[in-house]
Amino acid sequence: MPLRPAKSDAGFDVDRIQAALHTAGLPGVVVIDVLEESTSLFENYRNAVLAMAEVGGLVIVGLLFAAFGSIRRVLRVVLPLVCAVTSVTALILQSGTQLTIMHLVGLLLMVAIGSNYALFFERSNWAPDAVERRRMQVSLVVANLTTVGSFGVLGLSGIPVLSAIGSTVSVGALLSLVFSAMLSRRPAEVRTA
Image: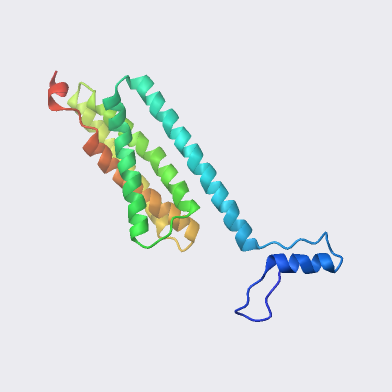
């Protein structure tokens, strides 16, 4: 059952209440500070997600290197994602919003979407046909506008969970496309060779 303090400004001393229950002969009754427990659960979850994201990121970089065989090509795929994540995180913090677990979920989703853009731009740079490169780039812009629009609508929601995920992914997807287009270009001398 929930406990309420007698005075509105008074707090609870959980240890004192637990000792009083034990003294009253109720050792099986446990007092739980719901705010502290839920905060602890979220912190543990956030730490686990961050650790798994780091390991997953290293595995992905390793797989990209195995597939491309070139550090430069791997960097042209990874660097736009790093720039987009850094920019979105900075924008969230600059707006005065505290990062939540929902922002973290949005960032992970943004990386999943943005990695596709980076990979497609990297692939289009190696396509011999300029028409095929242009077609792929137009397709990426259309896909990006659809993603930004869909998640942008979620970002306008009054529900905090949807708003956090939607705003994070919509801005992140747009920045991923922009950074991928800017940073995935091959040097002109390699392209003409």
